[in-house]
Length: 424
Image 1 (cartoon, one colour):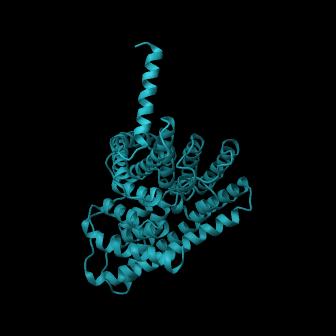
Image 2 (cartoon, one colour):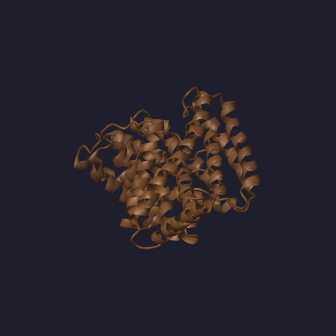
Image 3 (tube, one colour):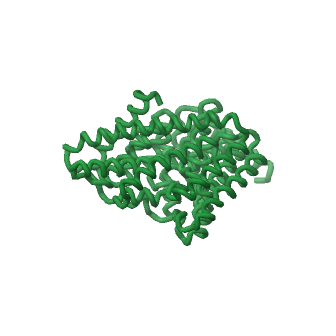
């Protein structure tokens, strides 16, 4: 077969593939695309984590979470340097793209059939890496979602697929991004269907599952089969503690509403400022937190582990709840490219452990780690309005079926409190 004939054959096969995907019976083709998008997303996520965690490990004596090991002068300098880099990056390359992360993915799905471009993928990749390295109080999961969704969308556009297939690939990339963050593929699937795609159908379910599984396998191959948190097996000790679980859900729901309100207020106020002014203010605030409360710098999963193991005292936990909420609201609200899923888990774990300590002082024999875990799920469910994804995440993190029932109660209580009582 000569070159023109081969090109014609490839074009005909591609056109046939595109037409097949436009129909309702393209499950096999979508399954293949799901695997491809999962592998592509896995490669991007692994590269992102190697960049951010590698630089931090080199700076922080091998522990990418140990900002406290730096002298206060260097901690204060990190967000300033990162802020200057972000100002230059967005001034040169943004071309009007200022919103990234989950919000950007949802906006492109709602109004642009899931079409994302390479420019925003690169902005998110290098911008979020700089923010995390610089110690801003942001998470990596939101950037992972955007990077995964962009990878799936770009794959679909490169293959010139119909819009319905591109939307499915965005969901595949979203699931793969969440799955590769914690080695929690089922939580990734539920998050993609519940938040981004807003549908549960066989045609979307199977390729999304395959994408999440593919990305998880790739992540495990590089980073090992370790979950993000050191969590022992947990279950509710007694049904008599259910009123305490309800109280925790109510407290987390109130805090979720406050978290959302704080970010909305900061974002609304920040719109009056130019981008360089917003990033400059965010850098100065992050530097202040770096000096006064370095535990809130970066992702902060080391502090989450300590809360889960009951190693933090009342005063420390209270400071971490307030400090992380303020630091994250100011960073994310002012447009720093990072996510709020990780910070919501941090705040929820600290509030859950704080609440359990207060219950213990009142004479109740409670498991501090269990309440910290329930707080994590409730804060994720309440602040993102993603109750099923939050429940699935804490179940996968613990491998404990006993967590399901109290998890359902606390997450739904928090979600309803934030959405119905406070209209968030």
